[in-house]
Image (cartoon, rainbow over all chains, first blue to last red):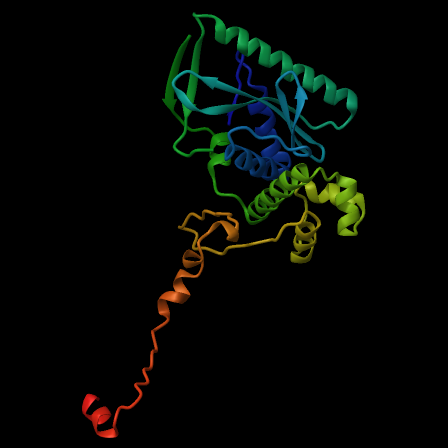
Length: 129
Length: 142
C-alpha cells in the first residue's frame, strides 16, 4: 500500500500518522486489514473493505474509515493500493463527503498520471506490505 | 510520465512494516477465516440472516463475526463451518515454514496414493502349505 500525495499534501499519510498517536488499536486494526488485502490480487469484503463507487474502496472499522483505490504502474508488477484519505466521523454526511473527496483525489491522480510531463515518485521500503 | 524509485523510510512506513501485535495477528487469522466463510456463503447463496439461523445465533452476532471482531471460540468456528457444509481444519507449523493447503476429492485419487505411508510400512507375511511333504523333507528344506 502507498499513500497519495498531491499538491504537497498527503491526506492519507496525515490521517494515519494522527491515528497511530490517538488510536493505536484502531491503527493496528487497519494495518491488519492492509496485510490481509495485500495478499490478494483483487480483494473485496462486504464489511471491512467494500467498494463505495467510483473505484474507491473503504477500509471500515468502528469510527474509522480509510479510502483507497487500485492502480497499476508500468513496469511495476504488483498492483498498488493507493490510500487517498480517511475519516473518523461516523455520520452519513461526513462519510459521503469523505467518499467524494476520495473520488476527486483519484480522478486528479489519474488525470495527472496521463500527462506525459508528470513525474511519479515511489519511495520503496525494505519491507513489503 | 516518468517514474522514479527511491529507497527511503518514514514513521508511517515503519509502522506498517513492523510485525503485527498479538491482537493484530489474531484479528488477521479471524479475517482469513471470515474470507473463507464469505466465499462459501456466496457459493451456496447463503445470506447473513440465513447463516444466523443455521448457526442458531443472533444476526447481530453474525455481523460482528463477519467484520472479524473479537475472539472466535473453536465452537463458533465449527458452528459456522457446519452451517456452510464445511469442515474446519487448522495447522500449527513452525513460524519459519510456509503452509500450502490442497483440497481434493477422495474419489478422484487412486487408492494406492491415498494411504501411501501406511501401506509402505506393511510387511508381507505369506505361508505355504505343501501337501505330501514328509517331516524330514520339511526339516531339510528349512
